[in-house]
Amino acid sequence: MATNENFPPNVIKQLAKELKSLDESPPEGIKVGVNDDDFSIIYADIEGPAGTPYENGVFRMKLLLSHDFPQSPPKGYFLTKIFHPNIATNGEICVNTLKKDWNPSLGLRHVLIVVRCLLIEPFPESALNEQAGKMLLENYDEYARHARLYTGIHAKTKPKFKSGAICESTTALNVDQSKTSVLNVDQKNAASGAALSLPSPLALPTTATKGGHNQEPQSSVPTTETGVSGTALVGIAGTALKKEGLTKVPALLAGKKKMDARKKSLKRL
Image 1: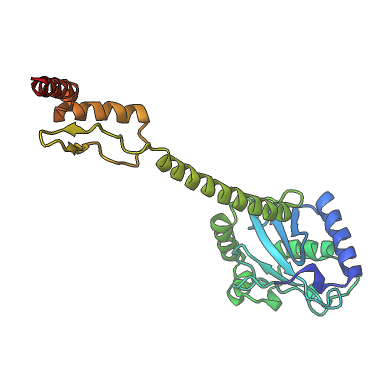
Image 2: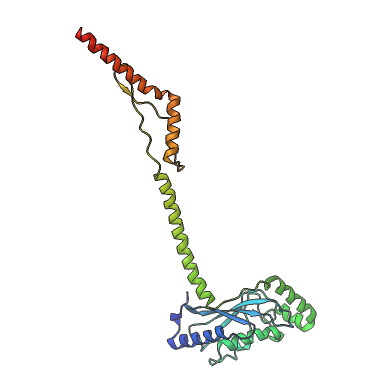
């Protein structure tokens, strides 16, 4: 992935200056967006010029800057589908400014203006899209109908860059990912806390038997992880105890005490 490290410091300084100028005072019908960490890809939204088959459309394009820019020209591509003689089906732009007429003194502003001018005055003699070029030369009305059809289908959405849009969107993405990670951790902790907050199974009293052994009654209270409060569990336990007849435990203990008292009386006799 290309970064600004691929450019000499003087080129980075010049690009930053020009991009700031494009952002603060953009050319008519052109809005530029850029990633501050990577000047090798310049995005632009171009409004279809009035009076052309591209009117009311917005076309996104990109310029790819090589490591030896500005000695070599950038490469231009339309990302929005468009029916145009000088734009190939893969989006590549054919214009002399980006080829034999390139001059290192030409800036990005000049390149973008030339590309928009192509939408006003195509050059069918150097067509990359042969169908569009032939149609433009032989039947302009049919060419215009095709171009308007493409514009209506592909260029009706109007994405707009704001100042530093791509840079801000990259930062926002990182922040959103961090927030999402924190939210997921919090949700997991909350779920674990709900499960751990359940009280331990209730300790039930023992029941004395005739053999003198203590028998622990079986609890019918289910152990769940639904986050039921302790008060609710006590209520459930009380109901279960009544069903099992365990509420008679005090009476049994009283009977045992009477039997012990009688045995002591017999021993005295």
